[in-house]
Length: 408
Ligand SMILES: Nc1nc2c(ncn2[C@@H]2O[C@H](COP(=O)(O)OP(=O)(O)OP(=O)(O)O)[C@@H](O)[C@H]2O)c(=O)[nH]1
Image (cartoon, rainbow, N blue to C red; front, side):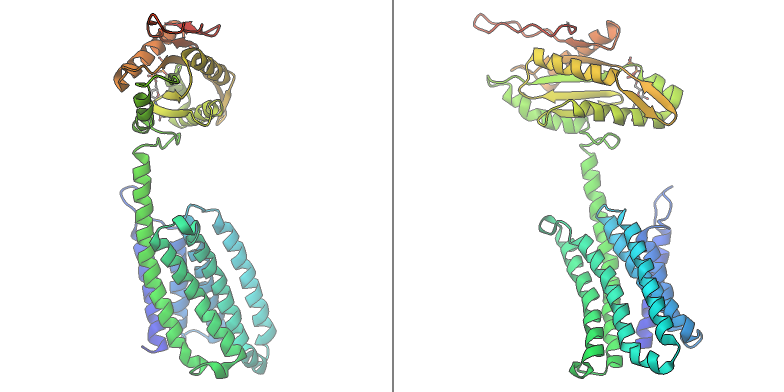
């Protein structure tokens, strides 16, 4: 294929991908009009199109505009890779770097554009400058893909390597053409189809690779949401039960006790009714954060549903667990939650128990729930501990509960 056909193919390929990305989006989800990859495809499609239509567009204007669109597309591709690995903030830095690149290119263009002789002499170095800019953005994308190299999926590592190659190969050729053209096997102009061919391969590989990476990320997120609550980012009921299972098994052996606390927000329905669901969500997240701050590293918090949470406190007896619960109750009661223009104060009721040798998940939660219902019945904003198991003749006496904590 000759250079012109390859340029037209690159224009068509980028614009076709742009249209596909525009139409992407399921159900009520809007097409990804502003996603970095969508902008990148539009920029590069237009850049290559201007070059393909060189017979109709004056070179003095068309050339610089096309190259800037191509470099802008490379910057957006890098931003897209950073978005793919969960760092959308990188886009701002890359846009700033692109603004600097434009400034440098315009300065060079103005400096050498006045005399045709100077422009011809500077030509190879302008090519080096453009290749260096593209390489910089290509390597920025490659760095995003290479994050956490050892644990990263194979596809990401291959994409990182290919993008680094696609960034460095044209730069190396441009430098060689400027410094030692005699070392090149063919004239620099004849290398153009090879470079374009490489870029075309990169477009197809990156398009397919990006799509597969996106699908993998979605799959991983769906698997995560099977055990994690999307709103509060703590284990959901299933995740909590999974974390609880080994402790239930351990309780069959004599040893350190493990406590379970059920936490329920008092009158949470009124928050939703009065301020709306969005404010209710903020309140839930803020209270989960406050509770987390009161827990140890080994403790676990999970969301059972609605405004109800469970705490697993390993190596904690009934009296100590009641103390922890009381500390959490006081912390939440003293916490003013700021949401929109409202400041909301909420209280919690809690039921506390410890895992017994004969417990199943059902019997354990039933006991903690009964203690919680007792706390609600006694007026809310309090902690109630379930009755400890009846002591056998050889058992140690059960220690007294903390002052201010009731026993069911
Ligand atoms: N904002 C928000 N609200 C939720 C969510 N899940 C459940 N809810 C609401 O949480 C409220 C739970 O209320 P309940 O626990 O039944 O009752 P309450 O008003 O807290 O009263 P008591 O528990 O009796 O003190 C209901 O209004 C649910 O609609 C959620 O993810 N976000």
